[in-house]
Image 1 (cartoon, one colour):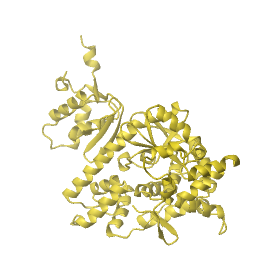
Image 2 (tube, one colour):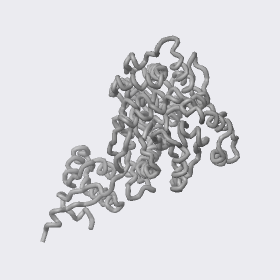
Image 3 (spheres, each protein chain N blue to C red):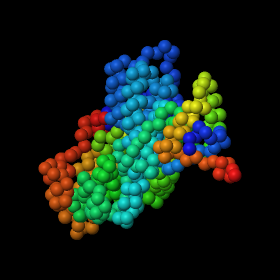
Image 4 (cartoon, chains in turn purple, brown):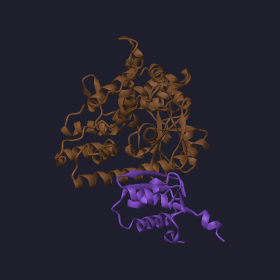
Length: 103
Length: 370
């Protein structure tokens, strides 16, 4: 299921422990579930990973990023694209207790 | 160790200052580094493994780089960080292999200092995994690693000298190098230092899982000892200076380490070079740790000599063995065991003795080339 269809209250957490380093605007990451591959995250994807030291709601990330990038017009779309990418790479997990509790 | 000479060398002081938030911002309108200066600085930072401080200084404006220079630094730093993250990710697995061999280990040098001494881990790069094990027969560890499919590239020189040998080098299946040390330098006194490192070790969370590393004081001491040995990297000087400047060390413990290993000379040496390379450095070490027992302190002089000249330390280390084992250990230093010779391929059987530190004289001190 795509994140773009989820409400901003969806919470996100890192799916796997990983060794990672910040390098300029990017993050280099080696996840525990794939030690043979170092991935490079750029832009928003890098920011999202770095911000998820503790799990956070999508809306919280959006708020922080909007404050940091006030001139970014399509921030919501970009954020959702970044999160979708991280989820598809197996780096992020979506935890949506509200959806799970829904009838 | 050489002193700063070129104009580019002096910019290294700004890199250190930017890490400690002391860099003076350049006057507005300052132009980027000349190609010549940038080339030297970039080469120095790459070989010395201080691309993190260079990138940080550029990002904070302490050093002005052109766009293309910045791209070069960022690209090189990203590669270095990929290596660092990969090595960190593999470390728990290597430690588990060693545990299976009955050898607990501490991560030392780059990985440990990145977490223990730097504000951000991306400021410290490293190119291999260095692990310290409790003094034991390195031959046994070699056998266990080989049984686990790890190729040992530089095994123990022999079964007797293996009890006091500084380190062996293994190659992990994914291609990276693992240096397994039982001492941080060649010489009989360093076996006790290893035990002290284990006594005050700390387990800290890293990306994949917890890793045991020495305390900040021990890492400061280790960096000074590394600087006194052949061909240290500039990163070791940053390690030392950051630890000394932040005063995050236990003065009594540092004095104890220096006294036990007679290594006050190494601490004095490291202070001297930190002051020469980093004009803003104002770290202080306890006077007792810097003082030798006097002009006739033979042990301190021997310790300094054996740190600078590895081959002497190798022969001195034999003194830590029982009397009956010493002749055999000396024999192994001269003619290494068959396993060691096989690992060297067609290289000389006396390579371990010929491969001496490439020092050059600088006053009364030794000068590794960076």
